[in-house]
Each structure stands twice: as structure tokens, then as C-alpha cells.
Length: 446
Image (cartoon, rainbow, N blue to C red; front, side):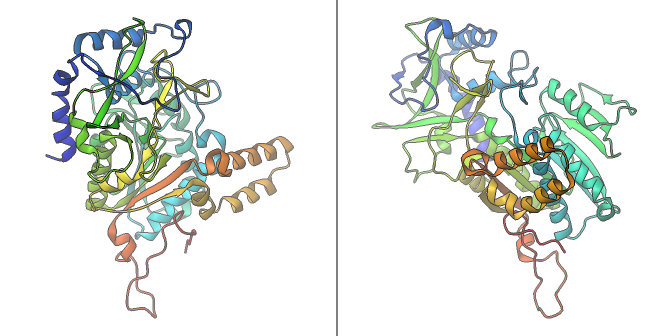
């Protein structure tokens, strides 16, 4: 049993611990929100709030991880389950919605890695949390434009998506209208179709159900919405931050500290120096699965997200209507997110694969040739409005005060990719010469 499975089993017992109503006052205050101190008129009683209050009254305060899981993915009332939250009319906009160049460069990255590792006869492209399908659509356009490079490769697309609403939007974006989708709600593969470029595409609710074959994995703004446990260092040791009903106002939630240790404390490093920590066991489980797959069958995983390398403390926040939103107010109406701790992802790969990064989005995209691609598109465009759109998109992606330094890229690759065992010998060398990994060094495409 992995450490993650063991901790998951331990959390089954956490309900008994949390059922003890004697909790500590929460002296910690999040910097992104007011911890439920809004006036009553600003705190509407949503169906999700009623559900959570009933749950807390029944079992006691809940962890932040349990709160995030319920608010985001509850089958009946979850934020992600039955709505389209992306774009100008939603609660946030992602990089693919800003500029086509972003997805095009990621398409180049996958082809570059496919070439660098020996041009396998087939590969799966697996995306975790594909949003509207915009990013994948841009990647597939690059695959079509470079069909001569990929002509002897059998490609298939595999999407891991829990939202029925978003999976329908993805199908509209990506699939050929004339080919009917196959649907089977009870099957691990709940939908199948063919993309507009003729590539088979399948939908799954769980990564575990995706075939274990040579694959490239993509996770763009996926890990930041996975549930986190939050811990505060106290004179008595680490104490988990929990969510309880405010005793002063019956329809409001508040943060409290657990009176004693909780099972998830096992995820905190013994030499941890921060006084506030967020840990995400679900991310660890997924990284272990990706690492196992890549080490056995090859391929690579590319992860792009808000994040840090084990330096930040409190990053838990909400977004509603493109504005920061108090995470405890009107649950179910806003997105909840926490920055990805890339140092944690690196540790949980357990050395099965090599990891690269994190590198800032600005650095990664520049290494991938975004400036050259922008110039090509500007030279081809005569419309002032289109040129302005391209320049604004570039600025949003690259400006350090916008997305340029807030987003990071991180990759998992086989160890032999760095040591050159997949490469032919150069005439004057006694050892294989691996090409650098694009994005993490300058793109070198032979």
C-alpha cells in the first residue's frame, strides 16, 4: 500500500476525530479572503451551503480538502459538474482562451518529444481536465499542419473529464459532426468519437481507466483545483485547518484549528520550515500513476499551472466573475483553487522518472519560439483588430506582471531521455547525444 493509499485509509477515521466539536479558535487568517466575516446580506444560503451545514452538524468540522471536493465535484451540486465556468461569461479565463499560440507551441512540444525519443509507431495524447477543448483543438491543428511529420504515427486522444457539461462542450469543439458519438454512461469510457481531423477520441472519468500505453500527458490548470489540506504550526505542533459552522451566525462558515493531530499530517515533511502548509494527497496519487506509466511505457507528462517550488504558504482562494472571492461565501458559486507545490510533485514521483522545472511560463514559451510564431502571424495579418488581439494575447501570456511569471511548466520524462539511450550515435561521439528537452532549454528540432 502506497503512502497515499495508507493516508486515504487513515482519513476514513478522521470523521471520528473531527466529530469532536471542541475546536481551537483559528488565529490564522487567509490573505486572499476574510474567512467568513462578510455581512449576512453578502452570504446567500446556496444549496451547497445547506448541504455542507447538514454534513458538519452530523459529523463535525470538515477538512479544507473535503470542503473543496464537495464544492467543486459533488455529483448533484458541484461547481464543475453542470456548468461552463470558462471564458468571458464564466469565472476565469485560461491561456488557451487568450491566444492560439499557446496551444500551438504545446503541440510542437509533444511532436518534438516524440521525435527526440525515437518516433514511436503510435502514441496516445491524454489530457487531464480539458476545459472547453480549446487547448486540444489548437494542438490538433498543429498535428494536422505537420501531418507529413506524423504520417506514419497512429495517434489517439484520451480525455479525463468528470464534468458532463464540459465533456459535451469538448465534443462540440473537437469532434466531427457527421460521426455520431458513442455514449455509455456506465462504462469507464463513457463517450467515444472521431475528431475533425479523423483521430479517435475517448472520454474517461478517471486516469486509471486510460489504457496503459506509450502516451504523452497534458495537465493545464488541472492540479490547482485538486483538494488541499491546510496546516498551521502552533506551540503544540502542526494543527489542521478545518471548516465549521460559525456559532454566532447560523448560516455562516468559519475556519477553526483541529484540537489534535489529524491523519493528513503525515504528508508534512519532517524538516518543514514554513509555519503554514498546504498538501494535496490527490496530486501525489496522480503523479505516482503518471510516473509509473511513463517509466514502464515511455512518453512524457507536461504540467502547466499556478505554483511554487515549496516556498509559498497560504494560496487557497476563490474566483467568481473574474474577481477574487471569499472561499467560505456562497459555496458552489465560485471556483476554488490553491497553487501547486511542484516540490511535492517532484518528491512523489519517487525517482521513477526524471523531472524538469518548474520554469516560468515566460521562459518556457520563449524557449519554444513564441516570438518567432508571433512575428509570422503578424506578418500574415492585414486586419488591425486581429493584430491588436495577437499582441494583447502575447502580452497576457508573457508579461511578468500577468501570466508570464505566475504560471509554471513542469515535466516528467523517462530517465533514459536525459541520458540519450533512445538516440543514434553521432559520428564523432562514443556516447549517444540527447537533444535538449524543448521549453526547458531552447527548441532544437532536427
